[in-house]
Image (spheres, rainbow, N blue to C red):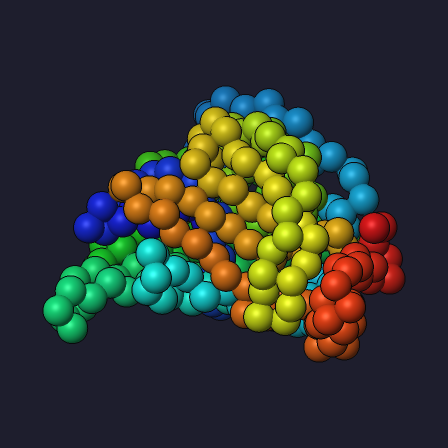
Length: 282
């Protein structure tokens, strides 16, 4: 998803990658209209590198996260929202539901609200369809993307784009996206071109105890955004700058309960050990 712009709070088209609630994925259970197909024929196909088949691309997020990821969102010392990602599997199909809510109050009066909902449909490590709905203080926009006929078709507020391959949505739960140079901005419906800087390992505080996490900084269309993944590949923190403000995601729930207990025990002993989930590499 793209980031809300807190100026006193307007949304820009800059990408963030927040994720939110559950919406109906039109592309997942109905074919696109003949009008869509006709429009697609007349549009140029943008060549993008297929997502790298690295170790974290085809993860089992339910085993990794325990079904849900929850972040509290802070601006300065104030909690201004929540970001939640939920996972549900049905055979080979994985449904990812994302919901993000943000509200800013001035003198106890709500001055601004931002709501975002998205759904992703995955099969065997490949993105089949994605939709999102954004309500930026009353201004609503929608994005719909789907794999179709060997290409990836995206319909957004500014029209249609076609990519030669599916790309990761800008929702961050899958560490595999750090190996990609093109992402789907799920607010604008545009392709975002990015590069990442690896900053080494930091200790990250979470509600389930401290963890060692690799720190990445985005450049390009997702600039001013930093993300952290623990050594099992879990997304555990994000910070981004927008409109002169620093927004921080603090992990409330980022791993299954049993893994959280192991991490807390290790923290008491003064040593943070990576938690390795079956099917992933440390």
